[in-house]
Length: 321
Ligand code: PEP
Ligand code: MG
Image: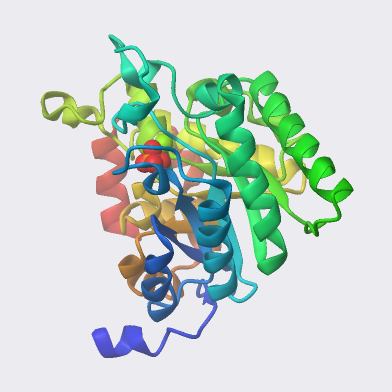
């Protein structure tokens, strides 16, 4: 099997009926790019920039960040690289920010909420990203967007920093796509509205499932509620993909679900454009997709979305795909 997979390293990803999708990888540091390329990923679908900020006692400078982002972009040689702005909070703390303890950190002051408030942190990161943009194919993604107002505010700040840089004579790419993580149910429900303004969606199922099922993703006792195949989740995923396509945008997924062999046929059938997963899952996923007919799976989608439980969905997927 390993030898079979190895043959697919430099291949694109097609279903048996010739529908193309993109298989990308999730990374946490520039050093991870090596594994991305060795495993034949077609891009980076999620660069979690938190790690630049963690395990130290002060914020990373604009220069440090510029170095990390441009290194990733350069090494990826023009392949798409989705870099997510700071997603701190929840389970990821930054002690040096001295933020007040919260009763419900996963529902609290985190990610884009913090960035819109602590704007110097956000603007420094955006400047580093914009300066790095000329080294490759950069796409900027905002995490934990719950309202259109948050997206507009974040994009407004990005455009302000871009104008400043341009007026200083610094080169910035003119083709940076700006998108959002869909990981809060309100945003999935309103995807049709968001799709008019964003360039792309990436569905963060780790959090989308947590917030839809109201079950802490870190709490073992409620882990049975982490249900990627629950029809409720599948319906939300479908809403997001359909909304993107209606506006001519692309929809990806960067939560764990994107690399799950049971979920992959269903996601293909729903029309997902980009799957971002751990690098080591890319070749098995490519091999699996090669054997799947998108048309055949799509014909079962209405039936699947009408199922009553996740167990029904899993049983059907195992028997049919
Ligand atoms: C997600 O929420 O699905 C996701 C990809 O982001 P993280 O796991 O970093 O919260
Ligand atoms: Mg998340």
